[in-house]
Image (cartoon, rainbow, N blue to C red):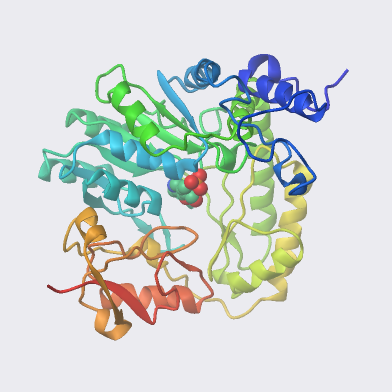
Amino acid sequence: MTDLRDPRGLRGDAPLLDAWLRFTAQAAAGEFTPMSVPGHKQRRDLTGDVTSGDAPLYGGLDSIKHADALLAGAEQRAAHLWGADWCRFSVAGSTHGNQALALAAGEPGRPIVVTRALHRSLLLGIVLAGLEPVWVLPEVDPASGLPGPVPVAAVRDALARHPDACAVFLGDPSYVGTTGDLAGHAAAAHEAGVPLLVDAAWAAHLGFHPGLPPHALAAGADAMVTSAHKALPAYTQGALVLARTAAGRLDPARLHRAFEATHTTSPAGAIMASIDAARALLARDGRDLCDRLLRTVAAARDRLRQVPGLDVLDGPGVEPAKLVVLLAGTGAHGIAVEADLIAAGMPVEMADRDTIIPIITLADDEATVARFADTLADIVEAHRGPPRRPVPAASWTVIPEMAMPPRQAFFCRNETQPAAKAVGRVSGELVAPYPPGVPVLAPGEVITAAALDALRAARADGGRIAYAADPTLATFQVIARP
Ligand SMILES: Cc1ncc(COP(=O)(O)O)c(C=O)c1O
């Protein structure tokens, strides 16, 4: 008979899931009286159902003394699945994973070759680690205004100019699903004697179907970070950091220290168990589920292309499971389209004036995705206007002028200046339209008129300006003059 709490029967191959199922069953039966955290003590009469299913890893999924061994068993299974020899589960997203890899990569003051289309978490990782970024820029496709890959030649050139670089750290696939030549990047990095680290936050499903590109490790990277909660059916915040250390470019003990440095000491067992369950599902049913995913996305692309003026990102170098909808030819404004999608109960991951990015995963079936595509097509019709040329967003076109390393700037005294007076000064803050969360301004970068205009344009188009002390952009935090 089907176990309703484990309908696909994954627990036999998922030790953390099995432990979570046992713990929560015991708690529901009122069979124990914990004299340990969490403080809700599994009661529902205080804060209600919001804590239902909460179980600490330590002292919940197993005793505080034994949970490490349980966790290690689950992480080893994930390492095996991705062909890694080192793996950790994080309850703090790819944000934490990126920071852990930055802390493992080098020493304060060492250059690191990094894509400027990086997520803000990696930039803060560079601040934490005191590394000095050597930026490499993605190519921007003039037709769509969206970023393509970072050329291998740009990485080779950066490594040649900085022979003391400690690593190459790229984001692949990009936020919009464009993929680069990771094997070429790995070769470039390895010839320079440094590891290739990849933020693959959106790509936990890659490598599990012949129609999908290989995952970063299979392409030759030394380490990758991926969010189990993005592409896989895991709890929000669940992520994996995976590495191949045998070649000696990364030290497992250092990776371990770096990972633990910024991870909570009280990981949520439910998140951990959901990563384990998602891994077990991928291992057993990944090919079939990815098959459906590829079919549904292909069908949605075909459907949307039937709408006059509407296009989708497609072709070589585009992740086939990603649906990126290009609105410019319809004249519809992405923020208005997004509002109607929210009203229809179909919120999307990202919308700006010219682009809509829904996230379609292994959890979506044909009918759901077809309904979404039909709804989107109808909404676009309702907002049709004169076609326009797409304008590349600030996040993809920023050309940084670095006045001081990000870590030095992070700790400098700031002052508040009105926008007009801030131009030409050095930013003390990170400012990123979110999504995609790529900093347009980073600590230590000169606030240029172009950056200010681009941020204002993103805000005027209805974008959220994140992390700025003043999200209205009327003032900026600049480094105080001595
Ligand atoms: C490219 C990239 N890296 C890292 C992250 C951070 O992931 P998480 O939300 O799992 O911390 C994101 C978040 O959207 C992202 O887009």
